Image (tube, rainbow, N blue to C red):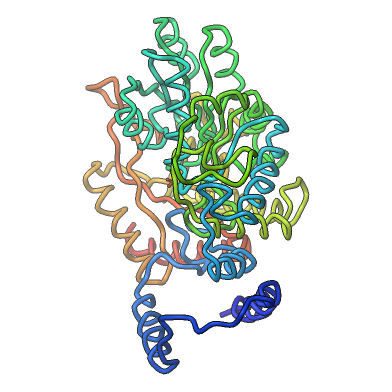
Length: 466
Ligand SMILES: *Cc1c(COP(=O)(O)O)cnc(C)c1O
């Protein structure tokens, strides 16, 4: 295992922080506890965590999980000495200022300088705020998003009492503009949710076309880029349609991005941005106790949540100091590594007749006629070739491959996807049924070096099942 340098970094930083507060009168902190007991409890804690799954190793390549950067872990732990609360300036003066700076850098990635935005505890809360504002600007109107949009959009809409309609997707999981237009023609849609990087397959909705339609039918556009938001930094490495979508992102009305997904942060860090700072008027409230000391705009006045971890802002700020959000920088190179790992795994799957990659054998949509095929980002999905087996049998075999990989220390994920995406036509129904597929999220920079090993294990695990 690589050396974990966080403890050393933290010791240095804690000494520096202690110097900052060195002029305070000394006092005895309570509760203390003796070192022996603390150590014992922490050893027990480590033993319990040993059973945790998923984890940091590159052979864990299933669900979305990217370990926080050491600087984020150390900065977060450092801030814990104070435990600032970014509900308002009064809850954490320095950490609030750091949040404002860090969020401005994220907005800058989308070309925004005048905007309203802040961190949230998650992408779900960030999307909730975006749809809450959208609902107030377009009262009584519907919200539409693709069938592959994150499942929380339906729930959020139910909470906000907004009508929500899913729109059909194509064989790569992207919203179909013609189906979107059918909905828009009905005249009652207020907001379109476009996803840049769907959770299941990393599909990128055709944002340019969506923005053009939304302009024609006077709708707002909210971009859910919780997963994929950072890929704009390596847009030149993406396929043409994804690149065009990222080029258009700055024209959206609101954007959600999760620093705790691809931004190397501990969980508890989402972000919502609005292009029009004027939407701040909807957040107005009178709290009797939180805002006394400043006439400045308080984070608490532009956020739905009250208490929020100031440590999240501190960790994000420190990470962006070390790894600025710029094209060609170290952070962007890390994203590009995962992307290359995904492209390589996908290439091997396509060349192997035991597997069917996404978009591989859909008639008229095949990779041969369409050189720009999935994966659009760094998520790879594939099915087992059918070879006349029925779908029940394919699902069973897929589970066996998944288990055999896990037995060899390679952890993938299972996902239900429409059969039609893998070339199976359903005779009896217009809508395609789903079946079990395999999925790998190659979001760790180490995955580029490990993709050969991942393939070896997948190959071994599949050998006896065909
Ligand atoms: C993960 C994700 C969400 C939800 O974000 P949380 O931070 O898990 O609450 C929303 N949308 C997309 C596209 C996501 O990938």
